[in-house]
Length: 251
Image (cartoon, rainbow, N blue to C red; front, side):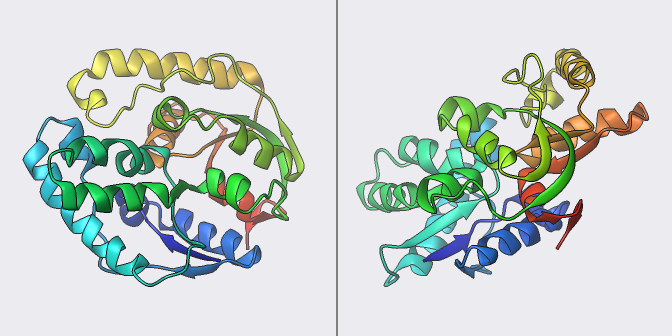
């Protein structure tokens, strides 16, 4: 089985360790990992801001790069992404973006059908909930909006967290409420965004967890920034970092 990594802009620019930990986990499970070096943004920031033509230009390049990568590969080849948000752009919004361009729409359908968010890929395709991770701590999980609401992925990350040796999963209240990031939402509506973030931080603290985990670095950047500014000693981790962990350190 082969996985072509779709590394998002936030991971590529600010959190490369998330991509490295994805590779660690996938290789631990025997997956052949490839990284198409020509990949760029999927176009989601422009799409969400209403700039459809700009989004199409970027998305066309993305389709070209990954269509070329998948061409001639076997049926057991997939695109795997460490973000529910960016995976949603490919699996849901590309069809809307290219609905009146048949050739590109066909490519979008092909890409969509072979794209999986990281936890979804581990559980649904690899049939794994125990990836050999060890982490001593109490973990609470934040559901990111696109992963939960657009892709319907709720149980997969929780099954994986429960499979980590030494970890207790403790649900917070309002675990499925937005953290207030929402990409450009936090820029356009900063006061509303901060109010939503305050609620999320309170729920995390009330859970008693020492670590908060999610599947999207946008959410974790937002939550982690607030925790850091308030000097609250709760660790923030992408789920790939948790699953790569051996004795609370990445391999």
